[in-house]
Length: 274
Length: 99
Image 1 (cartoon, rainbow over the protein chains, first blue to last red):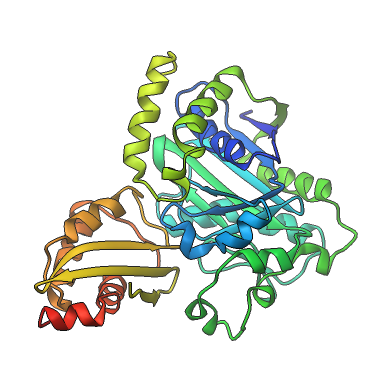
Image 2 (cartoon, rainbow over the protein chains, first blue to last red):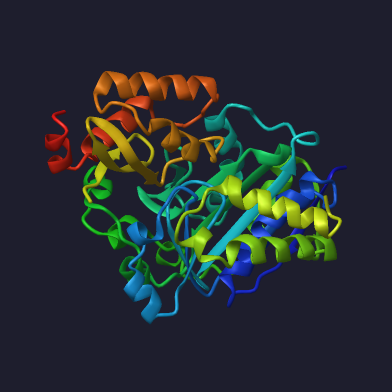
């Protein structure tokens, strides 16, 4: 039976490092260095913006600075999300040659989101459903966002789940334009998002994580096994951290991915990974 | 600088466009949409430099770009980018250049 590594690896005080690891894993899976992986992690105090976003437009930078909120740009699209310890992040990396994942992008997202929706339903959360593409909603309010990549011949999918995040802080740090809210009939971020704790206060993060693992193992027909971050993955992450994710030019100035990836790949050759 | 916003079926496009003599001098396209491959957005920005700021011209250039680069953007269309760009042109600059 195929195996899926469960990786509980996080450094909550360093979102730059966490997001560097986020890219290191699908790269390592792509190179055949690492097995198919489902990772869980949290950031203590961070805003993660989408690859096409400018921090200045999405983040109240003054508030972020005052509150030591780390602003990191990820390599996938989609919108800005606030992370604290009440938010669970998950990420899947599945090589295309081992897993049959639909090619059509809408189906691609559906393939990855379905087990998350089922995991929440399994815990007795009714009214949970997938939004148009990448959101997960409870009674029309967003409880999680997600984004996918189709690079490196790896099915990469990651997302967030609000369990008991500080929504006050979330709405203070994220700038959301009125055009984005108008068609939802709500006037503030806080009315647009929801914590799982609001519906099921008794559910723990561990239970949610376990439920997600169960649903993915069924959906993917895999045997799960706990694993650790390997030395090679750490080396790749170190390069990504130094060249890309610790840099203002990447996070704030929205530098072109191509330019950074060229540098990353040069550095990976230098350390003998590529 | 003025910002053109378009809320597509999935995602918000922001466009900031500097126009000189009726053509795009510089442009920033950003937002929370999904576009594959992602690095294409930077190519698209470069491709748009020097293009005339009118709907049909923009539509043709972006349509061709999407086709040539096999761009996939779920629930977001060429028309959405065109609309955002037209909205993102600063009024003064547009008048100066007789658009």
